[in-house]
Structures are given as C-alpha cells and as structure tokens.
Image (cartoon, rainbow, N blue to C red; front, side, top):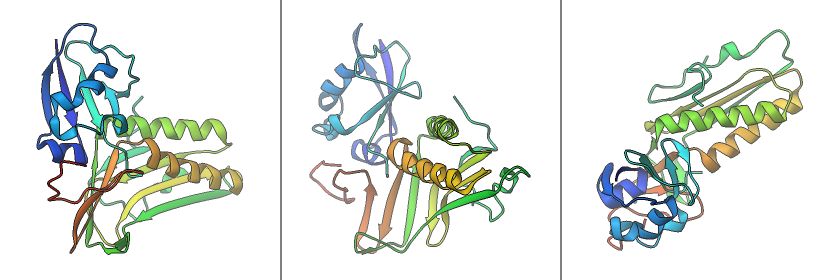
Length: 233
C-alpha cells in the first residue's frame, strides 16, 4: 500500500524534500506512522508527538486507518469544507487597503478590522523580512471552519479572512480579518476568536529572517536556526 507524505516548513527543511512516498502494510494507522516516523524519516526522530497529521486535508487522530493513495501531511506546530474565495483567501497577492469592503451591510452597526503587520523584530532579534508557508488547500478549509465557528457563537453578519504567503516585507499586512455585526461587542469577540484560532490550528507557518539568521516560529517548541546540525527542528 502506497501513501504520499507531504512536508512543510521546518519538517520540509529538515528532510530536504517537499514530499516522499512510503510503502506501508495493511491496517496501518496514523498512530503507526507517528510511532515509525523516525525510521521513515530519521531527521524527524524524536519530534513525532508534536506533529499534527492530516489525511487528505483533514486532521486525523491516531486511530485513523490509512488507505492506498492517501495524501498524508506532516504538520509541525503552527505559528501561532472550502470557503467562498471571496470570503477566505490564502494568496501571495498583497492585501489591498480596501479588501473586505463588501463585508458591511446596512444592518451592521459595527465593523472590526484586524490587521496583522510584519514588524522589524522578534525575540530581541532584528527582522528583515518574513516568509509565510501554508498547506494552502487545507488552510482554506480550516479558515472557513473557523469562520463558521465564530458565526455560531456570536450574532455577526459577514466575516472575511485573507492571509498572505510568500515573502513579506516590514510593514506589510500578513493577515486581515474583517467582521461586521449589529453590535460592537460581538464583532470584537469574533475577531479575537478568529485570530487566536488561526494561530492555534491553521496550517500556516512563519519564518523570521534577519542578520542573525532565520528560524521558523512554531508554537511552544524551540525555534530552529538554519544551519543547525543537530537535526532538531
């Protein structure tokens, strides 16, 4: 049985490949892959517990059985159904100043617009630019799901999310979240919820690049400097 492993961010750099094909036996589960990850991909030995695994663009528990032809994504801790392309956008294109202007309707008394902007420092180190990488198809699905979660919890109108990928310069907008609502409290709460959830679960990674080197920003795990020969990521 053949499955394709997709690698992203620090996992991709540690292994030196975007994808690899594995031959596995019948009744092979995600948990088996996690257990055997160090044998299949030695540079990832020791970090299997911190990696999330998605099968065919859906997060999968260890009990999910793999099938022939599956695409299995190894997702390092993130930095932090498909949506309508107008509502959910993951792209290299610059986020325009008037993006999401269509969100507001005459029924809305509040519009909250959150912009994540590239700053010139991180962890007391100078930042020259950022590089964002995403598992784009899955990221759109996850962002759409987050938007639906927010709509179920608060009385809001339209909600839109745009996230950049690729190289971003200082001062550029990396993520834009716009929430319209009849009342300001719901709009503020929904906006805060969306950005927090993006940082928790969206398969989007951020690399800080500066004169002292570069590193991926990955949740609570230690950041890995490029050129580290220890094999840790």
